[in-house]
Image 1 (cartoon, rainbow, N blue to C red):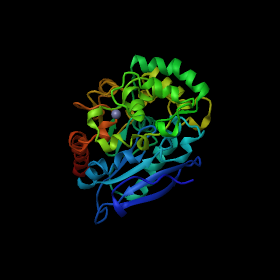
Image 2: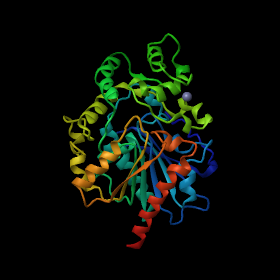
Image 3: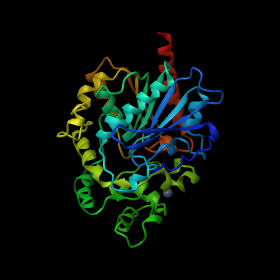
Length: 365
Ligand SMILES: [Zn+2]
């Protein structure tokens, strides 16, 4: 079972690194080799969100994060963790919780990269659920040695709208009893399938006629909220949203619901000793975070709202020793902070400034 090929215009600079987590789950790891080799460049691990994939960082139609990192003197590494839509088993019934991502995928990818890069610096840019899971790995002390972390949208303190919260509680239960996942690609669904009702519901009040856009923009996966600012997308990106964002597994909702209710990242598996390495509450263990942290959010994020602003306030109050800052990008929502047509200028600029600062601090020691 192989991964769907990465969609990119990087030519032969892309190196696929075979990577299977220690619980036997096949994952994806891609190194993008800079022209002329890596030299002493710091490496940057990039983590996608749930149902997305490394594709969101290599959009050929815009200046993407990988392009910007390469030009700024970094070596990008892209992990497709087990929630990636490039992994074929996500169309099926293979189940996992965010615990597995925090326990296996992220720490093992970090170890492998650290082994490969020797003494070079390693930084991390994480988006959405990728950042949420990273927060748990860090709180567990399973990921160490990072020199800087950027977390976009959400980190330790997830907060959704009341509508999304209500749907996760009531609608989610109903949906979960009948469906394994919510698709985003209407073409694969068909008019009379059990999924077509969801597409009908999310189209209510939508300005855009594209069903995949409606399920992401008008009513995120049928649980309310909106995942991007429509005008921020290039038309070519808009037309391939179904390739960029795959199906949402229903069985992940209970873990999402529990962390949202608590407004903090929690371990889900309490009765399975394999997960004892993870703390019950990541926020209570956030003092273990050693690296400078930049919490990033679009000013118009209508999915996670002000989660990262709240996270900054809480971390600053509870752990004054942490180097943490909050950066808000005006006019941006959630996904468009990475896939927006002008993200290189508006978002990646501040990200690279922060990484450069972390790099300089480290070099000055
Ligand atoms: Zn649209």
